[in-house]
Image 1 (cartoon, rainbow, N blue to C red):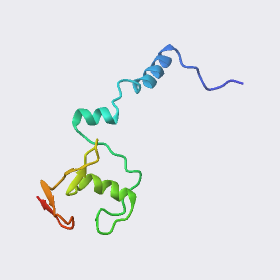
Image 2 (image 1 turned 120 degrees about the horizontal axis):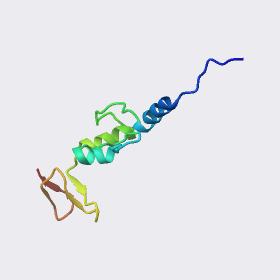
Image 3 (image 1 turned 60 degrees about the vertical axis):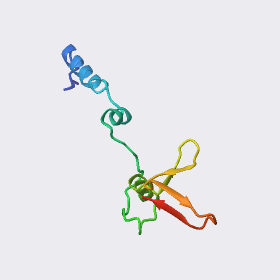
Length: 103
């Protein structure tokens, strides 16, 4: 019984090898691309239901909101002490009941 399939010759094998190996070149990772072009790539794991901070309750929404909105203060990444965020500075009353923020 004769098959209609013919094994490729040397030119066919060379073309197949070039095609397969062409995708293995200098691929740039998202981190390298982001560093080069100042782009932050962040995975969110799921699509947000909404972005309105007054009605959202899920984790995917909170990830986006934390990235978009800065609070009056934020944490120092090394000491975790409060440092200015949106607020330029703040004072605390002697009884520690009133915080006054300078924006």
